[in-house]
Image: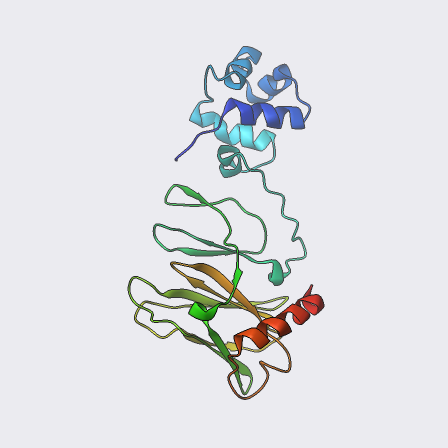
Length: 223
């Protein structure tokens, strides 16, 4: 672990749940002086107490250590609110339908923030029967490559893993797809809205400026 639970976090949670130091001490079978030591930075909870502390506050041990409590607001599991996490050390790609505290290689990951596609990451989307053929203009070297392509609809995720020196392309079932995302290991996450009347044509579409104008209109319909 690259960090440990602090007294400030314990105090914040205790006050949030309106526990006195004595009440929390009783729940954890320690003395109220012990709680006071934790909160004033004169001591730390033994590692064996992490799980009981987390249980008292109805959070996970990871949330306790990170200091970030998570309350998933995406209870309807709308895939359009999906979050993607990528480990900067191993490149592990993780998908979540809502907020989460995710660790990889001792690092607490933050969700990637998707940007609009640009001239260096030009995407082509073409309808082929009941699928979208997605192709990204990229050199795909061992040092600089697209890691994955994902297609989102309101109830489904299609995620295709890509590899260096391969092709930056994928086929996904149309099935209500509203957004295509892809991750570049150097430049991060990009997204593009699938626009009816453009991407359902039988030919590729690559006019960046016109696409952006259409996407702005589409955002009003997708929200």
